[in-house]
Each structure stands twice: as C-alpha cells, then as structure tokens.
Length: 141
Image (cartoon, rainbow, N blue to C red; front, side, top):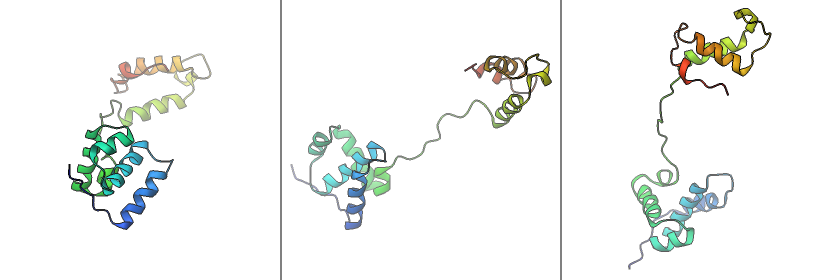
C-alpha cells in the first residue's frame, strides 16, 4: 500500500503538537490532533487506528474533514441546534416570580416554600397563568 502524506505547514504542525499535549481539552480533540500529525508523518489509516486504539472510520472521517474544511473542521465539531426547549422563557420567569414570593402572599399558611409545595402550586396554577405545559412537565425535584 502506498503511503500518502498530509500536507501541514510548520505552524499547523506546532499547533497540533501543542494541542496533543494539552490536558485541559477534550480527549477527542487530542486524538484528532494526533491523527493529523501521524498522517502528516505518513502513517496509514490502520497504523493510526491501532496506535490510538480507535477505528479506521474515525481516522478516515478526521482526515476527510481536514481535506474539506481545514484544521478547525477536523478538530472541532460543528454546533448543532438540539431539541427545542419545552419551557418558554416567559414560563421560566413566571416560575421564578412565584418562587420569589412568600407562600403566605398566595394563601398558604407556611412562611417559606418547600420544593414539594412550590411544585404543587405551579402545577395547579400554570394553566390559568397561561403556561399549560408547566402543569405536566415539571418535577418536584
């Protein structure tokens, strides 16, 4: 099998070496930096995978990302939107407003909220306050 080298500038190589020695970043970023360095030294996908105890698919993906998008694309994941929040900012503000009030102001005998009593109040009054999702989504802990 013919060895192929990954073209890295001296600056990129120094940056990757520094990253691969850091202990304060994610392990996957360190692995990706090492993948690029090993490939630049001419190692095969299988040799890199064996040396780092990862799959060859991971090595191929990292190299592919580097070739398509450069160093940052290979090292760091793109932010994804994720699941939308079920509780709106207004609903959160309403819950905070309730929690900051004394229970006596809302008709309760106790002076301070317990988590359970606050939860029950929120579930009971959420719908009439315009936040029906809070009556089912909240938990007492």
